[in-house]
Length: 108
Image (cartoon, rainbow, N blue to C red; front, side, top):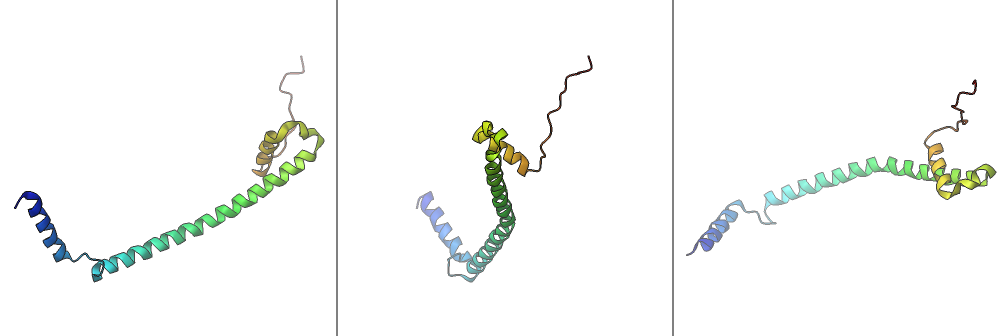
């Protein structure tokens, strides 16, 4: 008997002692516990993703509405689609329009 055959024989003897077949009670219990824990984990993840999805949907609605509104304002038409979208994202994030301040010293 060569080395490979002796290793195979020892492996078969060891696996018979452990009884790791699909039909053994130990393997079935471990498998069921694993499936239960995996299901609970996925359920927990799904619960935490729901609010983020609702917020993203609301934010996208805000951006679409703001782009539509700004495109109708005569002063903003020249900004283009990308500029309007950038301004809309900024407004939906909570920024407020500010007046341009002249930073040069006019007292001279």
